[in-house]
Amino acid sequence: MVPRRLIYYHLNKKDSYSSNEESILTHYIKEIFRKSRNNYGTRKIKVKLDDLGYQVSRRRISRIMKENSLVLNYAVAQYKVHSSKCNE
Image: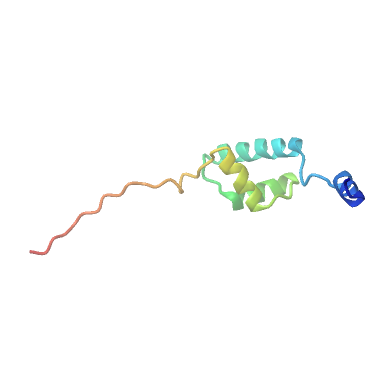
């Protein structure tokens, strides 16, 4: 026997976002990121999405960027040569 409140809970439960909205946001985030030549992070992408009329959190943008392997140019580790000075 299933409690009645459990049935109504699942009937009234709404998804926090639909898959269609998620795919639209993913498209816009990819487009903004590519136009910035891989320089825009979550803060600047959030501003651009606000201009387009989408209110999205930086955490959600970050999650979408991770899922699509969008990495900033500045975040990529660069090899730097360090000269070692030996005191004799």
